[in-house]
Image 1 (cartoon, rainbow, N blue to C red):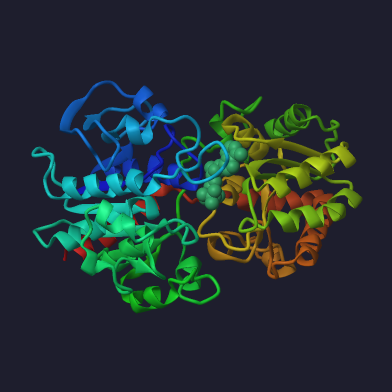
Image 2: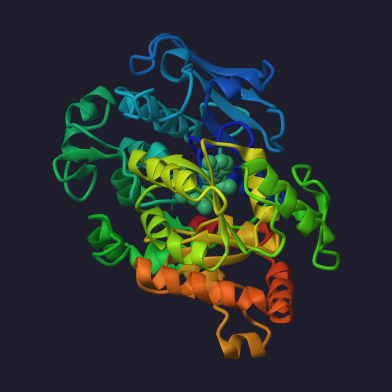
Length: 481
Ligand code: ADP
C-alpha cells in the first residue's frame, strides 16, 4: 500500500506546532508496518536547506502566480521517509513563519501558496510521478484541504483520500475570487462543497470531499460535532459522522524521552529520578528563578492564545505564588498575553520566569525540570505537551477537553488508590477552577510519597506511535475496501 501524506509542517525541518511532530512520526511508524509512505511539503527555506538535489519529478513556469516551480523527490536530513518538496521560491522562500508575515498577519497570497500544495498533491495522486502512484492521499489540516477536492472534482480515476483535522479552528478561508484563481469549478462553490458562508473554505473543501475524515482524539471527534466546538462546521461533521474517527496522536519517544534527551543536564528514568532534580535546578537557572528544589514548578510550553486558556493561567497565577510555587513559561502569540506574563515576571521575579519566543531546547528542559506541566486549554484536539509531560514525570494539569480528557487521569482519592492517577484534571474553563486544580497539585506535591507514586504511573504510560499507526492502517484498509 502506498500512502502520500500532505502537510505544511514536518519535524525536524519546519515546525510551528503539533502538526509537525505528527508528520515527523506517523509516516515512519507506518513505514514500520510495511506501508510505502511518502510526505509532500512546501519548500520553505529550512526544508530546501536540508535536502540534496534528488529527482526532479515536474517543473512549471507559473504555479498559481508563484513563478518557477519544481517538484523534487528527495532524502531530507532527519526524515526517515522519502519527501516530495514543492520548490517554488515565489511562494515559499520567505523568512519567518510559514503562515504569517512580520506584522503577524496572514501572508496575503496564502490561497495561492496552499492552493498550490493541494493541487500538486492531487496531481501526484493522479500519477504525476510515473514511478510512484499513491493508493491513498492523506491530507492534513486546511493547508492541504484542497487535495481531496481537486481529486474528486476532476472526476477521473483517483486514489482514496483521508483528511485529518489537527485543529478545526483554523480553516483557510478566502474570498470567492480564489475559486477561479485556483482553477476550481465555479459550480462547486456551494454550501455542500467548497463554500463556507460566502467564502472559499480549504478545510471545508477537504471535509466535503475526503473519503474519510479523522481527528486526533476521540473526545475531540465528538466535540466538533456540537455547536460549541464545531466552528460552524458541526452540521457537516454530523452529516459525515459515519466517516469520522478519532485517533489519538502518539509520541515520538526517540525525541521525547528523558532517558536519552540531549537537552537535559543528566538523563533520567522512572527507576532513577536524580537527573530530574538536576534538570529542575538547570531550568531554574536558565530562566532566572531562584534555585528552590522544594518549590513546585509548573511549566507551560505553548502558543499563547485564548484557545490554549493561557488567560486563565495568568489569572490563576496568584494561587501558585501564594503556595510558594514557580511558573516557567515558554511561548509566543497574542500580544496581551505575552505582555501579561512578562509583567507578572517583573512583579514576582522570584516566582515567575518567562521566555517569549520559540525554543526547542528549552521546551525539552521545561519538560524535564518541571513538576507539573499545565495545559488549561478551552479547546484541545489532542495536545502533545501533556503526553511528553507524562514521560518526563511532570504531572500534567489539564482542562477536561478533547485529547486532554482522553489522556490524563485525575488524581482523585480513588484513582490514586487504584494506581491509575497520572495528573490533575479540571472541568470549568474558569480561573477559579484552574486555581483550585493548582492548589490541589501544590498540596499533593507536599506529600512526597503519594507524588512519587503518581509520577511512576505517569512515566509508565505508553503513547507510542506504533499503536496509533496501526489504527491509521486499519482505516486505510477499510477505505480501500
Ligand atoms: P498545538 O499544535 O496546538 O500548538 P500541541 O500540544 O499539539 O499544540 O503541540 C505543540 C508542540 O509545539 C509541542 O511539541 C510543543 O513542545 C511545541 N511548542 C509550542 N510552543 C513552543 C515554543 N514556544 N518553543 C518550543 N516548542 C514549542
